[in-house]
Picture (cartoon, rainbow, N blue to C red):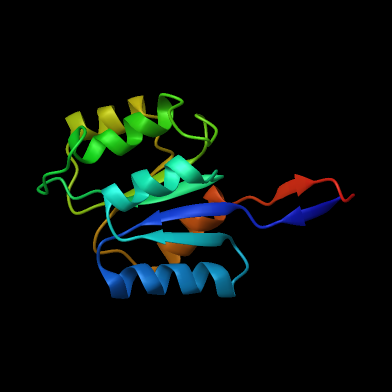
Length: 138
């Protein structure tokens, strides 16, 4: 058996932050990262690929088709993608109140990170999301 890096979907609209997170995860061998600049781009990727985890920036003020910022979480948990419905998910937010935290918990979000954050917090979250997946060599 050998370990493969988990496939992680990173959804972050800010290019510099997205690239920094992705390059950090790759260079530290924490995960194989696929980047999406928007919720809509993430939906397209989820329709064609399977992921082991997701790291999603939620913009609560932006308007999105299909259910707003929490619509992507609903999509993940309702078995409408090729990914495991119980896959680990972390979210990044600028603010969070008790009601939103309860909703995120209902969607099985395993980690909530408030912006701005320190790099170490993101690295730790990616490491938690991306425990290596065991595969059989053939």
